Amino acid sequence: MSWKIAALYILASSVAAFGAPKIADQRYIYRIVTSLPDGTVRISAGFRLEGERGIITALHAVLNGNIAADPATGQSFHDLRIVEADVSHDVAKLSSEELDSEPLEGLERGDSETLESGAILVVGGYPEAVVDINMKQLVVGIPSTEELVSLVPGNKRAMIADRKSPEDDIHVVHLASTTVPGDSGAPIWDQDGKVVCIGNGGIPGADISWAIPIETIKWASADEIAKDLHTLAARHDDGLFSVQLDVPQNPKALIAYAVSAAEELEKFVNADPAQFRRLVLQPPQFVKLYFHVIQDLPQHPNDPSVLKQYYGQKANLGSYSPGLPYVFQYISKVQKLRQQVEALSKVDSLGSSQQMLLESEAGQIERHEENQVLVSSVITNPEPNAVEAKRGLFDETFIDVPVNVLGTTIQNLKQLESAE
Image (cartoon, rainbow, N blue to C red; front, side, top):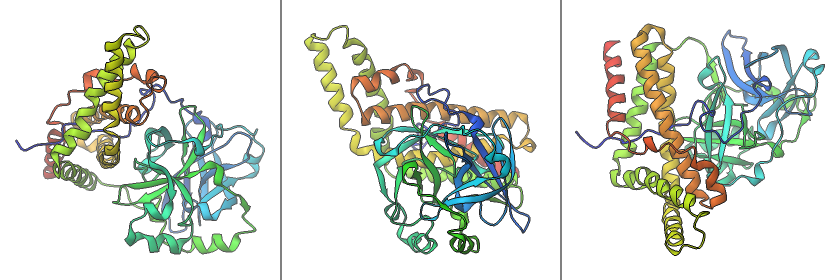
């Protein structure tokens, strides 16, 4: 058998297993449903901030339609309207008389300026229009912030520049993980559960995504910017960012998307198998050793052999730091596959046995990803005080990854494709 990917790492669909990040209060995270005049429905996410009125979301997702907000748990709101916006940052605030009467409760505000490359964040959104809130881990890229234009491929820059919402020269949080349609407007919070940025968008097929720093938003009333809002509502390029549903996706199309994502990932890894082994497969082994050294260090602080191991392993981990962009790019491609496998697992027509198989594959991929995220964060910051909290979260049983994981997934997907 030809070399196949020996591991699959994705952005986890649940952050509870990761342990470290706090989970934000789901009462203040909303599934935003915008019903358009032509009968289609646009799905995005939104949230409330403590001390502020209204629901914050992505501007592009709520233009030109009737807007409702359904929380993961709690009270829904209907007949919402845009009351404020920051056009240059593509952010809107929604409200209604009913929502205005609510207490000023919500998620806690943070600050993105303290974020470092490799930091672990969590997004709570509704990717691909799922009904239930989906929380997954994100990794801050290298560098942590950039001008939006630098993240956009050359052939897409004219489209972004012409839209002017978001402006292409604003500084955004660079995510080395792909947020997807339905995550637009979603809160993204740090390890302390504080919202540091807002899911905004990405370029389809380019594995690029970004988020709006929460502290950069400057609100203007809808009346003040009525002309800008009208101009944006008349455009037809919001597909860059959000989910727009017109007909339900059929199983055949979902299978085709999943096969395409799997083949794209396989092509990426097989382009340089040696690099994949060195940058993705080897680091978990060294992190495992480093965890053991960190555990021994407090007990033997003056033992020369322990100190030698500590400094040696720390230097070894540092040698992998230049390869993190490759790892982050790999994670982005894997995320695509996970999303499609999870979507397929919810298709009743496939039968319960096939659904269970797909769910099992997604679960294995998720556990692998948790290790890879941990490994990347340790490489980024190997100091003992930063590593100690992560040591107990490392799953040593998922270091030796089966070589046929991707092969099995592709084979299963292609069998599904041929059966349709």
